[in-house]
Image (cartoon, rainbow, N blue to C red; front, top):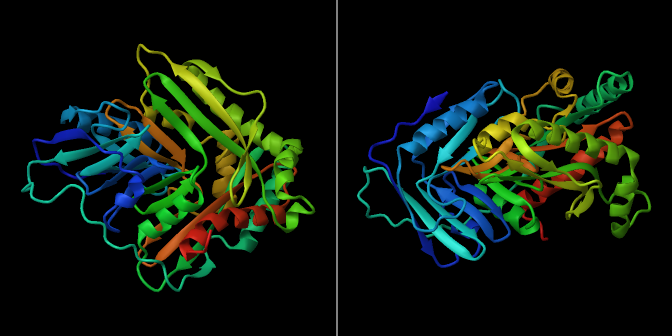
Length: 422
């Protein structure tokens, strides 16, 4: 693990500002933008006061311990008092324990918006002159040019074989479900501006949570956990269809009813929902889940969705990060049962997912915050972007269909990266 040193004293001030509109448009430049925004609400940040990185099975506990220790040393003046005010860390966790590093980044400046209330949080470490304004002039966003694609670490052919072998083992009774990831490499003529992909995704998928943390940029429709005091909520997604060759004669209006009628998709969704509920029950006084899923329609795909709510014990409620450690990975991104599914993924997928499908979002000093599942995303590095998508595999899965589903999911990032009209 690594920790960036922080000068003392560290003073934090949150003050109200006029509603900033779309906070995402305030990100001043391409240097490490931090973002968690849905429609016109959320948080953006820039600058870096501190950073913590870790890996391993105890990464959530280690991150929570560090964040509590760091935030306890701060001198905070909070004139707004809403979730996301005061000190905030943007977080992005690796999917697997011993793969990529998980990171927490504490920005120097955060601008937030909620229910028409705007605020700005500034952190003064005592080492600056105070002359530079917190909200800086926004530099022009550079579009990506000359984008071209090549196979990632896992080729389409290898991925098809992995899915086929997984189906064989699932039918043989080894497990019920495994979720396999597929990657695609994009290369541009010049270094990529993360804000171009970020704003493109936010424009195309306004009902998703658009995020950017340490080079991982995406728009996820799946809320892993939201904690506000003792209240917890989650949106589980599993089960997907889309318009295309495999949709046959279905129209856009028929996708939802067809999804609800699909035994394969309903089964996949049930595994995902039940796994989250089972992980939450030992930590919560009450957990409420719907009897039937609803349909979530996005421009590129349609999902089965279930919104789950829970109440924590008010005596000693676990923080958001510790809750995340207890529920990740759910069946929606790992499989059922968890450990056999993860072993199968490691064997057959045979690639490092990095922080794809890990929890991503923000946490404040009270342990409140929001974490999504890092889906529909790309890891940016210079002029390259590694795109990710994943599919749940069950006994009735067809490898060709899973390839088509992954391609449909990759459309989200590809269209934004290429600047296609929407």
